[in-house]
Length: 324
Image 1: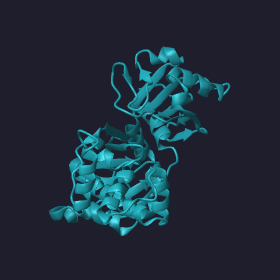
Image 2: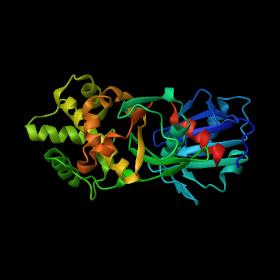
Image 3: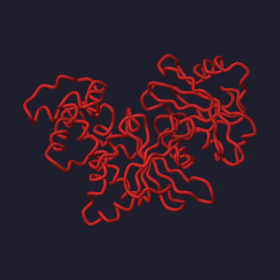
Image 4: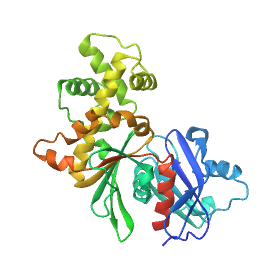
């Protein structure tokens, strides 16, 4: 069991930002976080240099351990982030950072740890039965953002047994003519089209382009952020259609993972998920989720909720360090 008698440092590190914070986990397993320090990953050549920048902003802080949630597969030997050139050697990190213990885990595994430790007030009900997360059974956690995160966990003797996955890289399977058009367009650019190519922040561009081509129109908006903003606000017809199709596709994909995991509950996480809360609460998302033919009754019994905690990656890193 990792020593957690004092404060530790936690970080949620992606290709764009590295978020650091002080953290403490009490004897009951409740984690508390300090104010996050947000650094741009590209401004630093490696983790130790960003670590020093973080500690400079926290004078007097001497953590006895650290936990890092990393965007990409976490290996036992040296490895790197998926979308940045930071490299990690798990054996060398404690001495490089000057701490006794370092926990490394996949960023979405950290999200799953956070979900397992959240109170009811930090999960917003979306659809299905309105009930707490099950004490037994599997919980699927899925989060669209820059990419698509997939993990699952089950509780055992009071702790979460988390399984990180690379489920976002399964093949994208079309179910309608619009999906066929999206797949055909993406095949012209990529040798293989994964789910993440469509269900991610940038995927909205490909969805809108396919809708525009089917309708013989030219989109007024071409940048993903502009499409999301106008589409969620209903200020542009093509963008709004793209958001609607994204929501339905996310519902369908979430249902697929629930079936694959044998899930008793599904939780949506991530910043994009939080911004889409109103759309995810609308009937179209749940209708797509439960549309599994003979299994519709089973799907209707699965509760869906949304993480509302502002920093689940940092929270999950702290909780994972406790049980590491």
